[in-house]
Image (cartoon, rainbow, N blue to C red; front, side):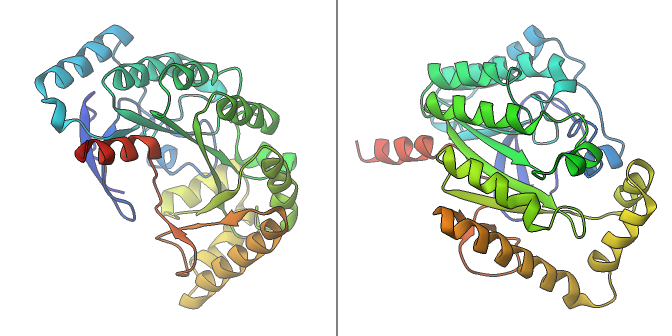
Length: 302
């Protein structure tokens, strides 16, 4: 992913390796709480926003006023490198909710990725209820096992809090996606990590999920050694950075097959990002609110 390094609180384009060119609005880079797998933290980019709420919204409104209506993007990915709804980002949650409301008031949809839950996500529920079809929230899960999430996903909301947010969003008519991962070798690639979670997601009406994968780097592996253990880093490197180029691909395919085997009896589909290891049941890596696209397409023939 190639995102401009200089933060400007305005809507800009982003070139995503798998999803193509996207519109983003990025005003914070603090990453995913204190998660050991957070590449943004590993790169030392954990920059919180320095603008106040009113100033940022005014800047956004000025940009939208300068644009013609037909130039508006269908939807915007808001803060792709900061999770505004985890416990440690309470200062960012209210600001992000206000920004999403500002976009929605102009008919622009918004995409949020989060490992947060209730009550921090209550603002998203309210926005989704006020602006039907203009919000999509992708909730991310790392494992069902508490001993795994406690070590690897520090600062994220609890599993029950996230499932509560999912339930409330769906009850309010908000489009919800579910992402599993990043799945890491010898960390959260066991059926016990996902089978109970898939069952609970199915009970809440989720019919498809998308796995994500760890993107290794030297700094990220150093972070994992420091915050988890040297043994964990060695196990990961033995597969991801093996001299055998096929080892990692084989592991990913086997993991996908395991997930599909566990999801199928529940009536769930496991889709993959275009970056994934096979060509079956593929999906786009980053997905905006589907209703926004449908409405704009229908409007062309109105």
